[in-house]
Image (cartoon, rainbow, N blue to C red):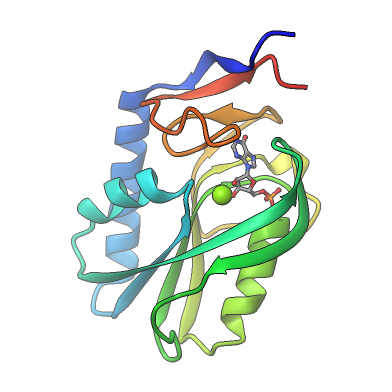
Length: 177
Ligand code: IMP
Ligand code: MG
């Protein structure tokens, strides 16, 4: 068996850059005059967040959570464990939760429920990618970068067993079972 590796490009770097700019413009328009708190989900969303917040025209604070969803390397189980919690409370804050990809929706459903219980003034989701055909739970994002077919992808923060996050494009993973 050969090692899985990045294959066909689904989204190239220039297309990513242009779409992230559009999302930043949408977020900037919607949060004008509000105290925006951007919460990133480590580690996959880091590249996306870094590019997104640099294009925001509204002030924002940043915080991060790390979660692990148990399961195989290409399928999540829905059992989520918090590895790193937020540094600060979010009560009364306008929170934008930024994710790399919504697949089954299990991870985000858990996170949204967890964050809602902390009493934010508002909570919206911004995801770079979504695979709507694979959804097990009905969750949708206020801001979505791209719809993907039901394939496993790597690059621009997304990994396969911690590999390939640094690719500047989003590529389909070849050779994974
Ligand atoms: P969900 O719980 O099935 O929605 O999965 C969400 C998490 O699984 C994401 O935050 C990613 O960490 C991971 N994931 C889902 N699909 C992919 C993919 O195509 N490539 C890399 N990671 C993925
Ligand atoms: Mg992730």
